[in-house]
Image (cartoon, rainbow, N blue to C red; front, side, top):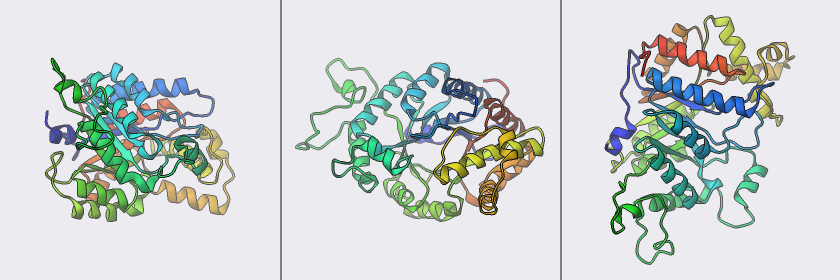
Length: 364
């Protein structure tokens, strides 16, 4: 399968573009990380059965309500429970890691699930500054987001096993990787995970375009930057071995329920959780009852309503209309849906209802 085939999906049912899933393995109040990760398996298998194109997990740290701090570990587990759906990171925050480590982790994932692995990379820490320092050991110089292009180039060389002669890493090989195919008696395919850049501003959009890579934009928390970033990506795009034309997906917060009031109850839990995170009080995802009873200040209410204005929620038909409108406005080649709610049951139900609204297949 070519790089272009692994990146580009095919819309199914009456969806205008492929639909995918972004998972944070959210942990609700009264729930455990074990339950959250079991829900991730349930959502991944549902997504595969209903024809969603890919399933990504996002790296976050020091957040009690998010259990996806180790994407590679979760993806290995999901690979064992699925057969066809593409799996990937949305994303791995590259400045938190040594590029060789990521090349070997995702080379291992590619060996476990050949032809199904996406390596989405971000330059943000996915956490607060103190936690980022603990992850990066920033007492050592040159380990930050500003070095992202250099880290990306190093990672790419490890994935392709093509450091130039004389480079200090020329004799170091990421394993599993292409070196196995070129060793005496080697039979392994030199294929590697599909590389993506993620972003919420113009920096990664421009870099992804210049490198000819697919681009994933975080519309779900940076909606006002969506159109400028996508325009910048398309204007900057240069064809590459990975792509001959731009390919951009957007992450979208969306939740469907059997009636609009229940959808509002569910998304309010995610909005309150985000309010607490933004004000330095991260915690578990509150219950709908707690969110409804919360005494919002005027300023807090303004934040929450602004946040919910970018969450597509309601009945299945209302959510489909909202997603279709978003696709028309942005021209995105793919919509990646994230459903933040207290319970795994509500999230599972939402993906099932959205699949129904688009007429996606009921059996894989």
